Image (cartoon, rainbow, N blue to C red; front, side, top):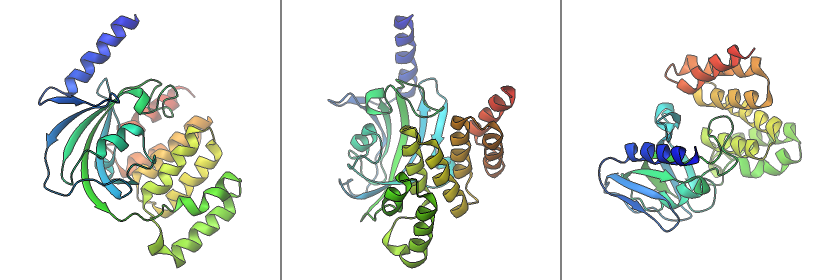
Length: 255
């Protein structure tokens, strides 16, 4: 059975890399240059903006910044993203489009990620490097200590104070709190993750993505009604959100 599964996964990955030459690095990361841009090369410790669509090896899309209309931002080479991303994006120039084939040890490993990415998953990402700039600290950094100390209201108050008085000093984009929320989910702090996702919903009420993330957190917690409510809000804002659609069906069928 393991041999058959390995063959299936290898075949599935091959489907994603039918054209061009796939390059393998020493770490085991594979990448395919889909098209070349004309911008400057990515630099470590700089802020990068990346559009992406992520697939499992069976072709299922599990996340897409393209669908949300907002590229993800992070500081390259600092561990804010999975290792396969830090390595892969560092190979790119602005305007480049790559396909990254990331083995599980450079992604989410044995734990997987929530209910979306199973354990030991090889992941495929279509990525485009959109921009490079001087990094700003993420807004989650000054409130992290309060959140981890379970002082949620103090963290929320500090967030609003910084947003009002120090907006230009921090990166307040939707992806910042969302990423922090998923970090909290990864270490089992589900209630804290829910608090951060709810704060993001308050800040970005027209974003399908923030409701999708909140729905996932409630689903992990086992609160099916709240999970369905938030997935439905996400689907209303983005009718193409297949993840929300599928999870609503699963949740309703299990009630």
